[in-house]
Image (spheres, rainbow, N blue to C red):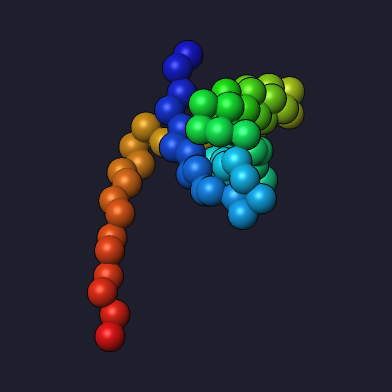
Length: 75
């Protein structure tokens, strides 16, 4: 089965990127650059899903989640 997950990539002050998977609480990893961060995210998601399967829990995904970036100019 295929799952769809949105990931947030944030530049870390010390270098590299922190990755957060919003639909999987606590699923956070990091990488030295964007490519590494994406590879690490895939690995973290796979481990997280295996744990959910082992517990018999539902596996959430972002198939029906829409994303929009809102930019506000505040005075």
